[in-house]
Length: 172
Image (cartoon, rainbow, N blue to C red; front, side, top):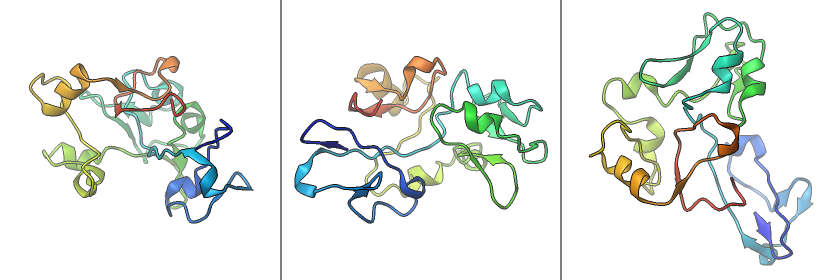
């Protein structure tokens, strides 16, 4: 969020899992009247064309499928955490039950059957969409190619495939 004095406050309590239950950010109470602009950007895997997490995995447990989706093979993962550190989007985590690195997989088990990822299907505002970027007639692909869209942290060269309409420069 950006306050009236121009200060940017960034917080993600519990990864945003429980929402924002107080006006405290980074240990500081924010007066609601002092908020100029607020943003919520979900933390999901950006399914990069050039994924840093794949490059650093010493055993090949993080890999990219032929259709471009980045996945984790839990049987191969040794839990070293290199991929967690390499991800510029901060979306990878150590799974407490399986004791391996994990992340969003775009519901690969669903999209390979022609279904939408669960987050797209249940988004009550229709804000999340998925596209076949190789299909120029796909409605979402048309938006990406004709409208002003942005990606997060473009400067890292990972070529992310999560696009945002109207993404403010304070967020990028």
